[in-house]
Image 1 (cartoon, helix red, strand yellow):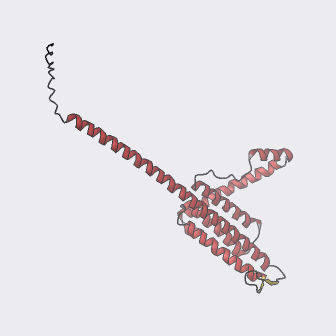
Image 2: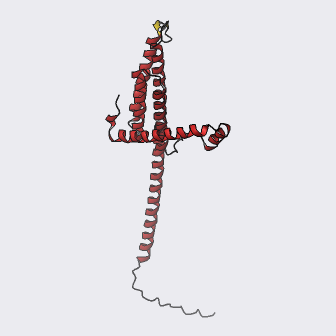
Image 3: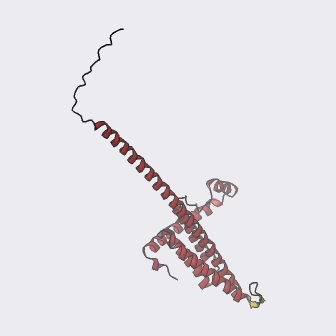
Length: 236
């Protein structure tokens, strides 16, 4: 029987480190990894929540802004209808489609106009809770234009153009609020060039429109700035 080899004794150098050092370092790295994962998840959740809030805000602004534009357009239309009927030489009595009773046309038009005005004011009040100041000022100016048409009972092109200009301003402020590009007021370049080729005289008319558009843009900016600083300036 062969003799067993002698045991090999390895002398480990004494480093002076405690026995619990390696487990402690491993635990620290585990805690750092868990903390980094927690912070990353928290930041991701916060970013998703912020984006979701922004989408809900944009959706609410679009719904309330579209509702205001629809009601303001209806109020302007009903005001013009009432002004046309009130100046008519013959006013007939017709059957009211809502009540089934005989009523004068002006009375029906006045009732519809008052209802449309109430809806426009209600839509503006709802929009004032969420809309930024520039958008609210533009909506208020648009409603004031409709009120001028109503109170003065005028259907002239000047007041109609003022209403369209302020409506375009409201539409662009809505688009800026939801981070969309504003809509231009003039036709695209290709359409303008084709019209100029067909009608050379349109160069002069386009020049006149450009000057008028610049004046209107300056008036819009001044109006929006005044309304943003002092809302009481725009009164009827």
